[in-house]
Image (cartoon, rainbow, N blue to C red; front, side, top):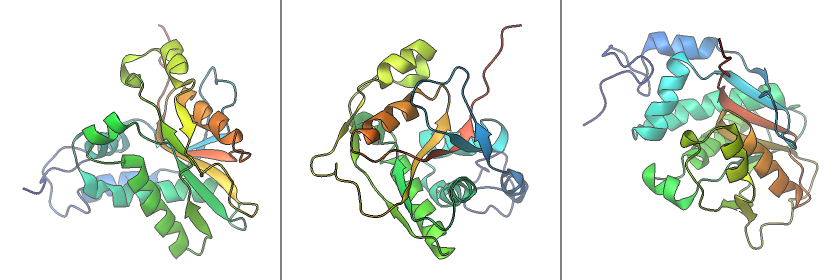
Amino acid sequence: MLPVECAGCRERRPGLRHGVCPRCVAILHDLRPGPVRPDPAPPGLPPCVALGPYAGPLREVLLAYKDHGRHGLARPLGALLAEVVAAAVDPARPVLLVPVPDTAAAARARYGDHLGRLAGHCARRLRTAGWAVRVHRPLVARPRADSVTLDSAGRAAAAQAAFRVRPRRAAPPAGSAAVVLLDDIVTTGATLAAVAGALRATDRSPTVAAVLAATRKRRPS
């Protein structure tokens, strides 16, 4: 059965667009990408740009997509991610999109590579707007603990050595492309820093990381 609830507000509303009601669509479209930085930031973390905070309809749509099998949300989320890339990179440069790879276990749990799908829709949206874009997958993820259960120190430890270069994928593509890391959420930045470090080993340093949402650090009261 097709979902009848809006992925953004979990209410049954008419006029769903790719699973999201008009009200939540308007809220998502009103978000504007901006720079974000975890505090403290891990060494090697590239500049980061996020569509918005991990809250409200954006959080709910991401959860519905990742954890509840709402794969039809990949298209609108990919389009939103394209807006982040467009805000982060000079449009005159070719762009190389590098999605953070999923572990095999995470891909099985989510019925596929969720970031790979987003990267594909993001690239198509940018190409339609006239950008020179390609998706590059030079890394694979080693098995590691679920970061949801870890604190900041645990995330950093798990991220170290979590990625390796695919055989025959180490050589960077020709040209002076801007290398853009793609992820859905940035929390501590440990995963993005680890991916950036692995990419530098291939002589392809990331220019920026583009993410959909950034968590807000809770300050002790």
